[in-house]
Amino acid sequence: MAFGDYPIEYDPKVHGPYDPARYYGKADTPLAQVKLGELASWISRRNKSPRAMAACVSRALWRWQHKYVQPKRAGIAPIFQVLVGSMVVFYILNYRRISHHKNYKYH
Image 1 (cartoon, rainbow, N blue to C red):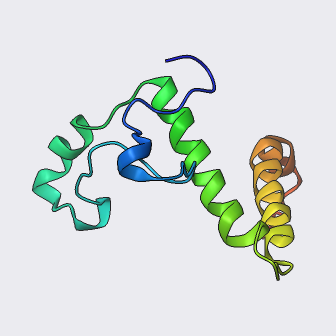
Image 2: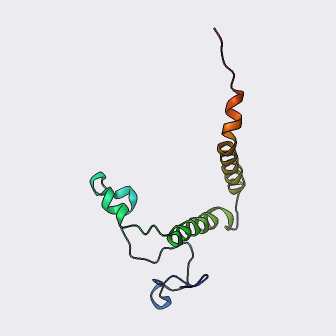
Image 3: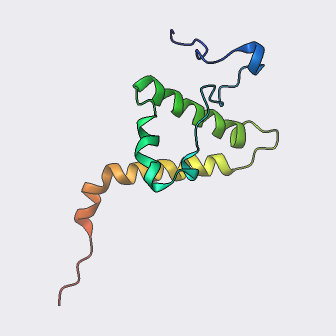
């Protein structure tokens, strides 16, 4: 499988038009339905390769775009989501410098 190819599990005769937001692999139990005793076996069944992680992030990005960015009447929600997300990321990155400016109360 090369960069930019369809997933191996995708079959156009079975699945129809390709949707980048859909996982075409074998369906498994959703995380919300996994019991605590089955969690270790559920995690061990996951594919933890860098390519699988990149595909997961790509599917999540496509789902977010289909829901918030690409509708005909898209609102202001994606702009605020990107702004809040970037504020959180930069706060985490700069926390070490920000934490020195705390107001201490001396008694």
